[in-house]
Image 1 (cartoon, rainbow, N blue to C red):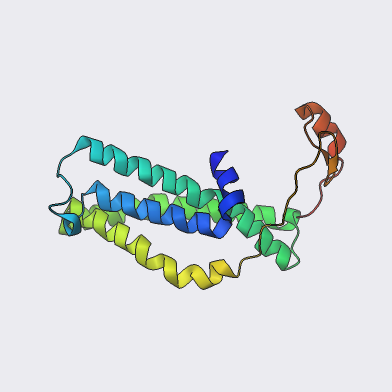
Image 2: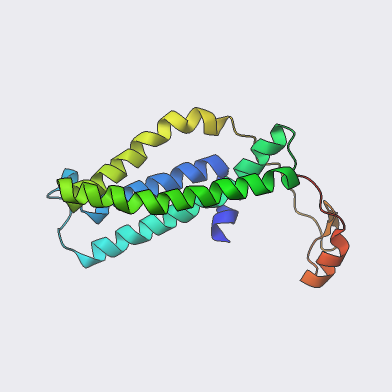
Length: 178
């Protein structure tokens, strides 16, 4: 995918931060934010579409590297993929479920209390403000291993590169840890 390739170029942590900030900017455009009054037109359908595109793009960029970061963090602590995969899957599913439950409730309360423009502004500002305190934790995440380009057919970690999917599956053998 584009997001996976971009994570290889940028690095996982910078891509997560970029994705979160794109989502934040999308929230500021969605209202549009009263902080940007006079700069952005109100009630503009193209602006709302652009905001939603930024939010979707940012979400994809932010989410894609999180699985790799989680697995590398487990590996750094001596936990294999087989040991960690169920717990990580449960954490991701629980996070999405809690977000689906609390997100609309919180957003609805904010919209009723302060209006749509200020509600989207508060989400956008929260995303901008909440990233810097977590940067020390993100920056201490295990680094992506260096990769090199291999000629077609050369073995790479138990897989034959550039094979048909069925042939690659047959050559894989037993599943290894991280």
